[in-house]
Image 1 (cartoon, rainbow, N blue to C red):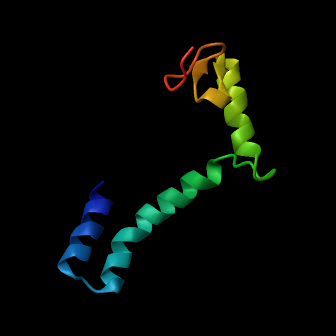
Image 2 (cartoon, rainbow, N blue to C red; image 1 turned 135 degrees about the vertical axis):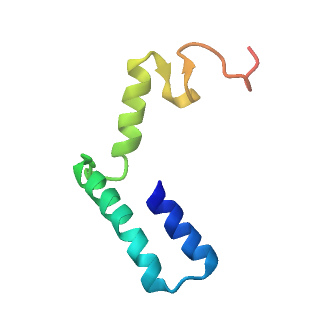
Image 3 (cartoon, rainbow, N blue to C red; image 1 turned 180 degrees about the vertical axis):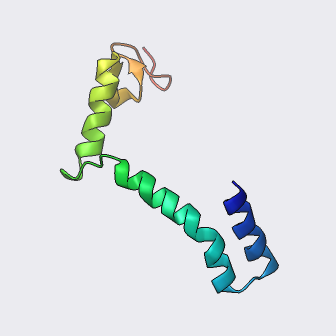
Length: 79
């Protein structure tokens, strides 16, 4: 958090870009290291949507009704 605040303070005070970069580099490196460990799926456009649908269905929720229990009406429907 100290790195983020130092960079933000420098930005607000109008510090030269070279000085701001010195504060941002450790944060950028940490974010890059974190992202490098994430198992991103590159199978195609629908892969994230499909995972989300399977996750909802695994918990008994209807993906087409945005998380309502299967068989229930959504608040916008009258039944």
